[in-house]
Amino acid sequence: MKYKGSCHCGAVQFEVEAPDHITASECNCSICSKAGSLHLRVPKSDLKILSGEDNMTTYTFNTGVAKHTFCKTCGIKPFYIPRTKPDGYSVNVRCLDTKPKKLSITQFDGINWEQAAEKLKQQ
Image 1 (cartoon, rainbow, N blue to C red):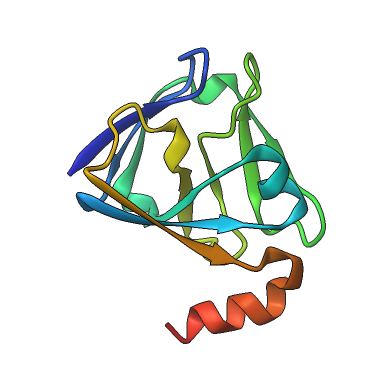
Image 2: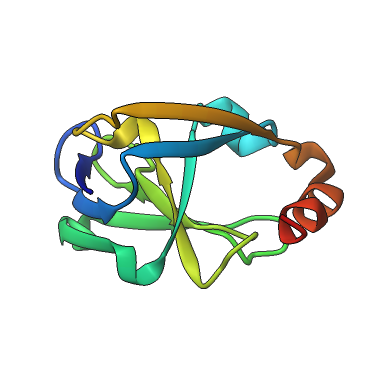
């Protein structure tokens, strides 16, 4: 299914291919818990930026692997390149304008990132 999404002001718009039933993860790390993101990991080929790429800015911290992209106007992070899968994207399910038919949420222990990432690789 194709979902449309955007930042709050609508400057950044995107489309993502994902199942009808989305399983998203909620991370307790410092940036994710403060932003309230629900993560849907997808391959780069499944996300298409429709508009606003020039209105985005990137923030990195710690290892610098994750590329947190934000709308310059409203500050919302609709998607970013995650440290767990830097060859793909993590889409914030809360930024989808088209809501999934079913949403399941799992927990990711980003406070203990290395151990949680290792468990994720084994799944």
